[in-house]
Length: 253
Image 1 (cartoon, rainbow, N blue to C red):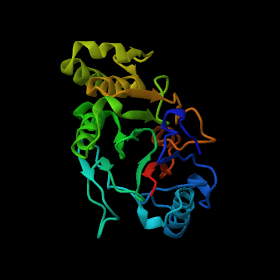
Image 2: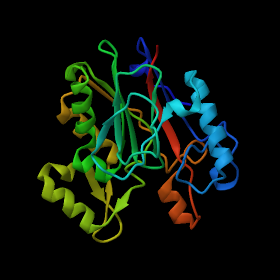
Image 3: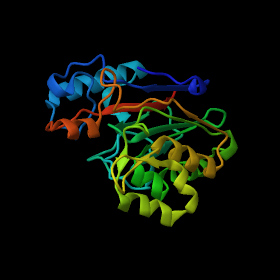
Image 4: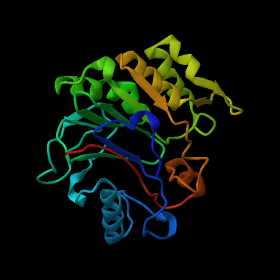
């Protein structure tokens, strides 16, 4: 489990869980929190109970959305009454609810305005970041009473710029959005390809949102197999599935 110094705030609990410390086996070893994975359901439930216990809550108060790479942010005031809704971010001013994001290369971002007691969490893959999920989370937090310049955000483990090779169509999409986006790409040995700095791009979107503080923990999921799952590493190895890391934040009672 990894903690961020800038989120060590009064009335806030958080954690960027690694893959260590759970009960799953094989390619899912060991703390797989992915409800959408093909891991044994009992193992996933036990892993999520382990994570919930860190926050001192029952497992159904560790709340996820069904992530679809959108910019959509929902307000959470309790466990979902039925199936997880489709969205990629959550905001809350309700104590005792841990907002949990599942990732395996995409960027988990946790947000807090400790003084006004509003929190947020988002799943920022390239598509979500590109379409504004970071800004949408900030906007929803402001609706709940947060002050933009008081919001602290932290980017947890995600794929690093030396591991994220992309094709020409990907580069062209970002060039069309803004010529300034060229700074997030570095040349690749493969013709027409480039390496994309997802970390830097998410940081730029947070800066544009006008928040008070943004911290990148600088952790690469692809490079650190001991601590992190990676969707791209799974693909390169031809494995059938992958585990999901959980990053979560909660207001204490």
